[in-house]
Image (spheres, rainbow, N blue to C red):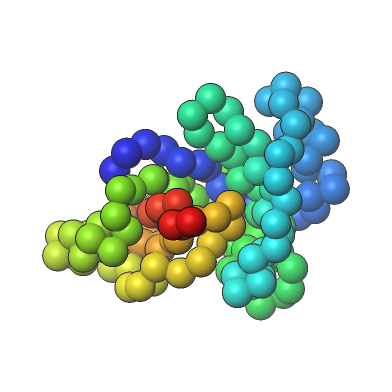
Length: 134
């Protein structure tokens, strides 16, 4: 793992959350993006070498909607940048971690992503990600 790429925070409403985080972090949101396959609208903030990703559900069946219903707004996941996502998935599986995605898929912010199941990571939702090739 190279570094913490971003922290994911579930929010009820990006229109309310973005100005609050802009004031809190003293920076502007640099990107908003819908990830239709995950039923989420994202907003990103650059903080040094890492990012904050705000996540708003776009439908009531999305993983973020389910998270918000169960837990309310707040910390959702930590994402680690990796050199080679396919080999990292294989390494993690061999080490006994349960993956939600056994094959990388397209995510927000030009990334290939895969999530590890919290049951195998001490209740923490972990994402691994790699920049997509040009």
